[in-house]
Amino acid sequence: MIESRILLLGDDSFRQLYWQLLPDGYVVINLPELKEEARPVLALLDLAWLQEQNVPQVLESLEGIPLLALLTDLTGFHLLNPFLSQLELRGVLVPPFVTPENCALVEQVLLRQRPDQAQLQADLARANRALNQRLQEINTIYTIGKSIVSTLDLEAVLSRVVTASVNLTQAEEGFILLYEEEILYLRAAKNMTAENVERFHKEVSDSVAWRVIRSGRPVMLHRKTKIATDYLASALLYVPLQGLDGSNVGVLAVINRTRDLAFTESQLFTLSSLADFASITLENVRLFEAMVTEQSRLRSILRHATEIVLITDEQNRLLLWSRTAADAFNIPATAQGVSLQDALNHADLIDLFANDAECVHAEIALADGQVFNAQLTTVPGVGRVAVMQDITHLKELDRLKSEFVSTVSHDLRTPLTTIQGYIELLNRVGPLTNVQEKFIDKALRSLTYITELITDLLDIGRIEAGYNLEMHNMWLDLLLEEVGEELLPQAVEADVTLSWETEPGLAVLGNRRRLRQVLENLLSNAIKYNRAGGWVRMQARSEGAHVIFSVVDNGFGIALGEQSRIFERFYRVCTPETDTIQGTGLGLAIVKSVIEKHKGRIWVDSALGKGSSFTFILPGAREAPREK
Image 1 (spheres, rainbow, N blue to C red):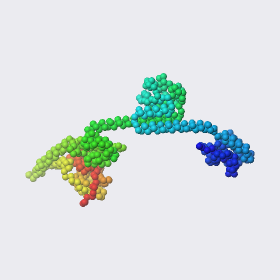
Image 2 (image 1 turned 90 degrees about the vertical axis):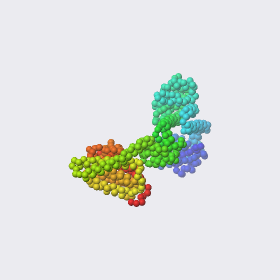
Image 3 (image 1 turned 60 degrees about the vertical axis):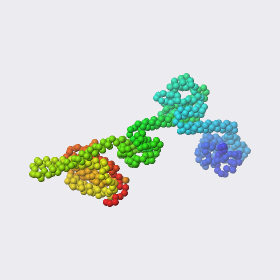
Image 4 (image 1 turned 45 degrees about the vertical axis):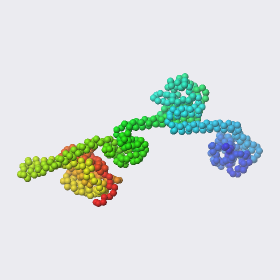
């Protein structure tokens, strides 16, 4: 219970005097303790003390408080004159202050401020009823909120919302209208007869509901209002159901049809809270149905897909997979959420997912001899997706083709060598004319070209078959220096400046002969496809666990449209500058095959007329080579 307070405004010399005037049972406070929420029932003001204060500020704080002024002499009363219309001055006490008359005056003023006991009890009972009603409303709202997060049964939740709305507002009827495709339809109702429900099914132009949906604001009316065909309400309260995007998707309504009882602002607040829960349910159901539909569509796609599809999260835990993937890798139905390494027993596939690059290509072979072309893509915020196509038939065709080419090339070498030997011996049989020497020179150049072509074809076959590809840890500085010095005379003859540089201590796991062949082909091309006075640079550097090589020149360059094809077999860039340059079109194909066999990759950056940069990346050696 809040204690009654009396405000004393004066110095300490009057405190004992004040105590003699006041009855027991009151709390005495000073001006600094004055608060709005606990206003005093009486203020005693010493006018002599007031003369030394900020008069307007003190008197403004006394507005609405019953006041008794203590007047020592008449000179102090003039301070009150400008404020008399604002003050509740109930009397003036003059010396001697402590008299029966003055004490009676103080008690009389206090008695007028004391509320009637019956009125207090009535107010307290009314406050308790309002508090209990509010607690019931909060408890109902809390219960409905729990039911929403525990179920996606839209019909059940909407029915609960309507029932709670009717109970909490003590309305006669309640209902929910939903809006879809320019039509209002009744979705849930409470206490409505079948006849009245039928009216709402027939009447879709409830003007009040349309007004709420279009404006997004609630409507509360206390008058006879037609809300459907021959359907009158004495009082109604409509609140909008709003989606997450701010659009209005329906109306929650309560009505008093026969009772002339208006709804209140408190009930409007309660109904708005319940409408929010209904809106949340509608949105949850919509999102859940959309998710189920998308999942069903995705699972149907995966079920009928002929490709192997594996989807993992960012920690490489299995999320989804196609039926083909389950058959190929024996993935159990319980593997969802299991790490790829624990769910699958396939080293090459696990190594594929261990690669951190955004997009990775690889070939995956199964125990039964099937071969798949795999592409692994990182999807931000989701994880990783691997798609694999069966290329077993294509690999077999490629093998047969390679065997055919290798066999034919090998069989051609013997007769070609014999022909070349006899042509070179012609000038020893007897003198040759100038025309004969020219013919012999052309024949020898053609034989050299055919021999180089056959050698390259045999090389590609051996590389792809993995022949003579033993890998060793090797230092790179000596290899770059050897290749650079070997091709330096060719660069000097072409008037091209050749340079090379490498970081100390670089090493890779590789085949020295094949990596030398890669560097020779790249350097030879950079020199051949350059102008007099040009330059070529060969570089190697480390980046994390990898080593990056690059051969850069300022030569003729390659058009953008041809860059994607230059690693194909027999493809050559044709420009006026390159027409006279001899080549088999297999050099870059050999380079690409060697790099891929070393588990690396190669790419080109070039601009026509400005030069080219061929870059390839290889895994670094896991341990240092024993010898330089």
